[in-house]
Amino acid sequence: MPLAEARAARDWNESVPVGSVVVMTLDDGSEHAATAMSEAWLLGGHTAVVMVSGIGGAYRLSRCRKASA
Image 1: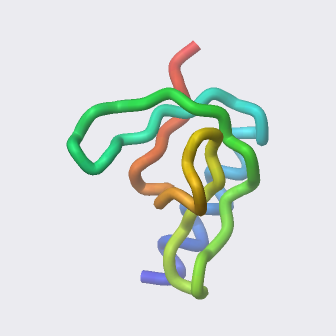
Image 2: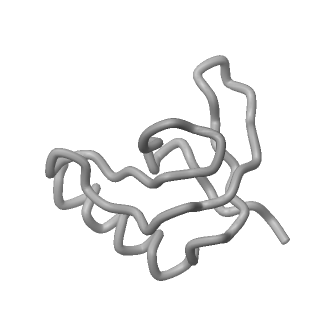
Image 3: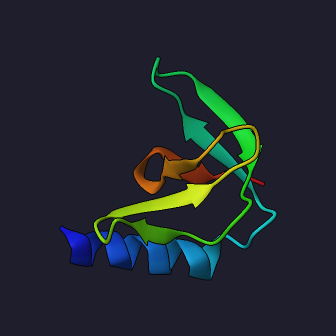
């Protein structure tokens, strides 16, 4: 699992620059647009995360995608 998460973070960083608009899926299933505030990284060595505007702390990368242009 950590290898797949590391690949996800690498791929994210190659395709979603800091400052890009992203869409996050919230706990209730709704979607929310925000701005990527950091590159993705592995939290605790096992979970790919990214910092986004309006959310305190890191957000799981598997619940984020780059917004369509």
